[in-house]
Length: 113
Image (cartoon, rainbow, N blue to C red; front, side, top):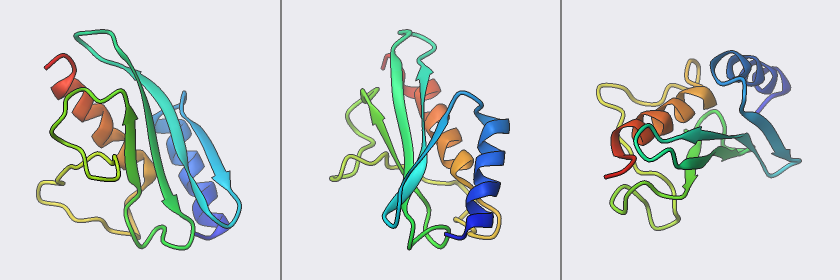
């Protein structure tokens, strides 16, 4: 990931999810984290979108969440498993904020189920 790309990601995230914070482990990984409240249970979900610096933006960031709203949409490494209907990851246009938006949608659909 280049510095200009990271700076652009931070700007996009501040606009889309102003309460989320950026983090980076130099030379290893970077991402964003924040808390979102479930609409039915009022559970507070900690959501993290992160990616290895060497792989981003060529590969989509992974999304992690604690607690899980349900038990079925999780990969073996604890990542949220989701499908982008009609869309594949485009490194030139897609962002960490879009990955967090998928987590917010998941919480809206599965909180309390």
